[in-house]
Image 1 (spheres, one colour):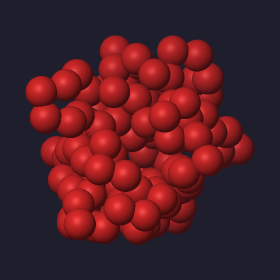
Image 2 (cartoon, one colour):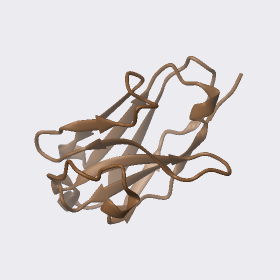
Image 3 (cartoon, helix red, strand yellow):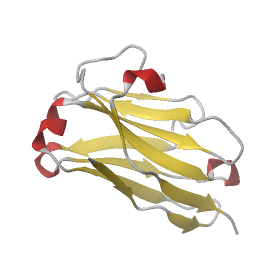
Length: 125
């Protein structure tokens, strides 16, 4: 089970940190990803982090503005987003990939085995 939280209303230029808590310690062995889905659009990849070493990758649209990290002791993955823009408004989903070492195909939804319920981020003045 994955539980995403931390969404809310934020002004343009602001920051927000999303959290994704896993209910089982086995998730420490999984790679984790964040996706988002804006109204009327397809769900798109945002960021990914492998297990152990924590190698990261990002969508071009968020590079330099987003940081994914994980705390394995807390079974939690974070997504820190800075310099938010109205186009960042979306429901953000976390997902787990049982192939924790995977560094290919991380932008594909098909690479992920478990999904959280999503948390809404609204960027507006």
